[in-house]
Image (cartoon, rainbow, N blue to C red; front, side, top):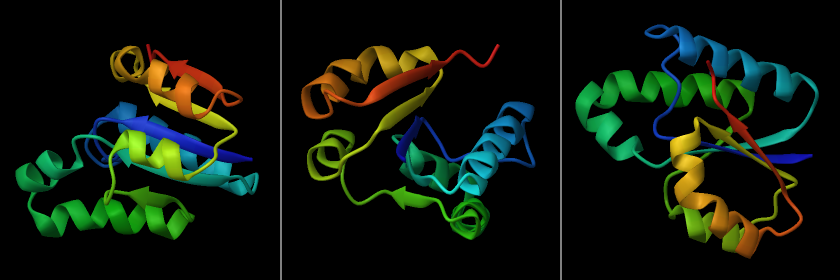
Length: 117
């Protein structure tokens, strides 16, 4: 299965419990041999806030799991160019703004909206 994970930032597993949870979900999904792509729509701001060194620690950790990170094209570009079986939104707020695009470009994809709490 090919899964697109959508979040505002990359998971910072050593700073917040919600990100520990996300990192563990990614790890479990990869162990099941699913192909995963992570798109963080505020990754640039995250990198500016953390600094390049800290930001790349999180990039490296995801890559070690086998997670592909998309930063070169926007959300709609990803949906247009790639096919996914599942789109997983961490939190409802990024989902409300983007579900219509998923339905347009990926009409067969299942959608999960994780409320975390």
